[in-house]
Length: 320
Ligand SMILES: Cc1cc2nc3c(=O)[nH]c(=O)nc-3n(C[C@H](O)[C@H](O)[C@H](O)COP(=O)(O)O)c2cc1C
Image 1 (cartoon, rainbow, N blue to C red):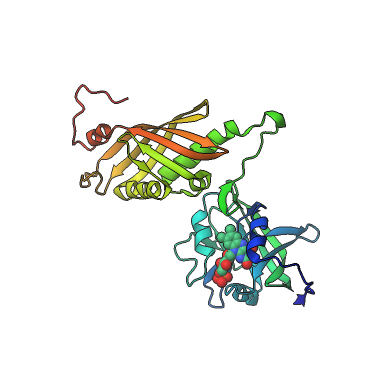
Image 2: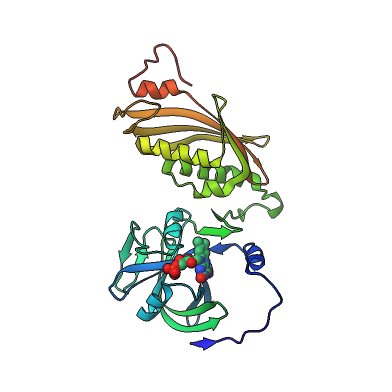
């Protein structure tokens, strides 16, 4: 292990530095390996990078306070799992201290000896080549043994928020590549992922601090209550699927016409589980400002839900 000489720096607090470095978007990479007893473990870094192509070398920095790095170092190998925008749960599990960090995570054990987290966008198997003590961090250099590409889009961390990369279409002129069309896609995608899969990371990243959600009944909720509503819906229904039937934008107002199909397996609206397959249609109207969702109005007809639970007969009523 080598050490870089520390040069006296001006009086910059860690908080000030974090604020500035937070402006740099980073990838979110799970460094995984095993303990001496072959138990999988790991941690998250935003500092993973390619360092050299010939020979193939990579680098990342890890705080000296990390309790997991000494374990992986002693095994001499690790895998860099490049997390996808659908793996916020993995990031949360490995980006904290604690025992059994891999509990509940899906992974494959490899011949290389390190776990590969399922659904990552890439896996890079490395041997620890060298390590530099740099201030309060260790800078690790890894020699790449093998790499494999998965699918999906990489998870991005920027300014304290998670999201994914919104790349310009190369066929469009840069000047005309405004945020508007892609923002519609991003909002509609994040919305359906939040309601359909309970994966609220991308939606949370798109919401403005003053976000308000209005219901037809005049109820107004903020983000935490909205997230609770998603949880409650998923607790009461299994096989929850949300389909966006139509997504349009006019004069800054996004309209999402959606259909939800699920199985009623828990209490909802005071109705005990009927085990019926239910369908609900509805629409959400979303306002945004500076690329962030500020307000949302949602309409859906509870009669349609009660009808598919066989509790209410629609008769001649037709639900739109
Ligand atoms: C998005 C994100 C990026 C992170 N990047 C780094 C990093 O580059 N270096 C680091 O030391 N810690 C980083 N962390 C924090 C570590 O993942 C966390 O401190 C580590 O899991 C601590 O656990 P350990 O003591 O088991 O190693 C990051 C966390 C998150 C959520």
